[in-house]
Length: 85
Image 1 (tube, rainbow, N blue to C red):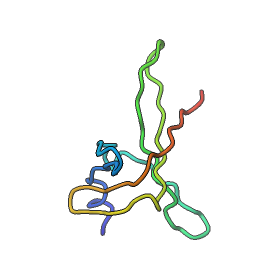
Image 2: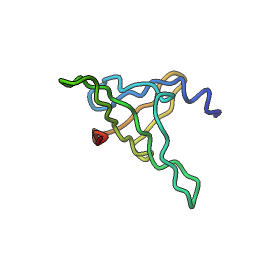
Image 3: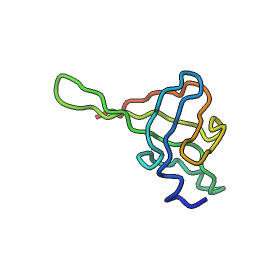
Image 4: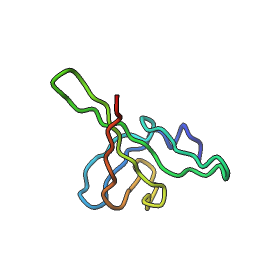
């Protein structure tokens, strides 16, 4: 599968059935020694008193259970991290 095809797919949480975002909006975390994808970092905007803070949800590659024609099914709750300024 080409990245352009994968990037268009929606990430769906299998546990809650909620839409997590689009693969193309995520950054890849790649193991520099093996070249394998470790995880996806999906941005999560959140409002704060002084504007927007940007955080991300990390989706480990082994939590991806199925890649379908339109969506990617992810098992389990992933951690949410906030970037520090």
